[in-house]
Length: 383
Image: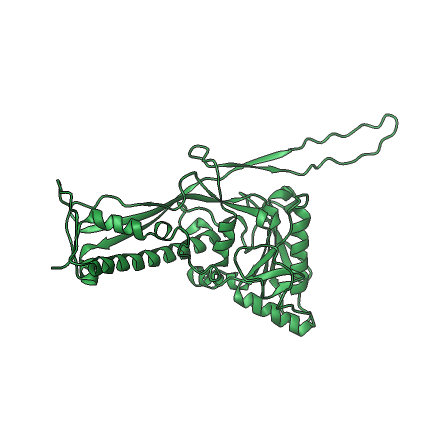
């Protein structure tokens, strides 16, 4: 006779094989080198106050626009009204990952029997012919859990980069706060196009109408040809981001996250224009998120190739491709916030009375918070 488990026993087995419980000292993790963006966001993780249903408030200090004035005798003095602080509120979003197990599938996979809900029940709720039979079920559940967790990480990695226009119930991602395409206040300059974007902006305003603290720099269509504009674009982007976000002791661009095609064009540009490439940096990486420090760099700033950018192009098919982008990042620019006790919460709801299935859930209450919006810059390379 085969093994016999109740739905409650399956739930206990699922909980015992859940990576955080099974391997507390060495939890199973997806390879962070394949998802450097998820590692970067996770490195900024912190618990933030929920502030009711509306989410945390972020105060931005707006730079003064008071002018200096010289005067003599009875000259009339000028006074300018100014805003010292600007408040923005960012809502939490509930993110759910659910997994359901059909009892027939378990029986086919491990050769056991799953008993339906039974009330009342005796003390013996689990029966197995042998230890090998029980371990076979545990192994099957463990493999299913690992696959579930890996897919969850893939989902979170893509979600945190994308705007939530495809599902407004999800958190606003990086592209929602720092768009990499044409946006408000764009200004044309020789050799390229650059622009500034304001959080919550209304189209049609000029750049001068936006507080500097809410502007991020974009260069669209940098060229990687001989005598192209790529080097100028990267230097300008770094300069603009560090100039506008100055005054913080830990500030500055510490990493460039790039698509593979962008990185290849960077190498091509350097080769065509005699620009030295360092592919084996000896300096310690400025931002440690578990990614190898060896690889490309730009004037001491490591360039990390993010394979997710290619996947996002397949999902979104945008005009300005992710794979052609180089994102200059100051790690102080954002925080991945979780409500207290609402990160990666495991639960297993009661089984349905009219279906032979068992369900498991992972829930998060989370948001991405743009703390220093002007500390990020984006360079898009013409394909």
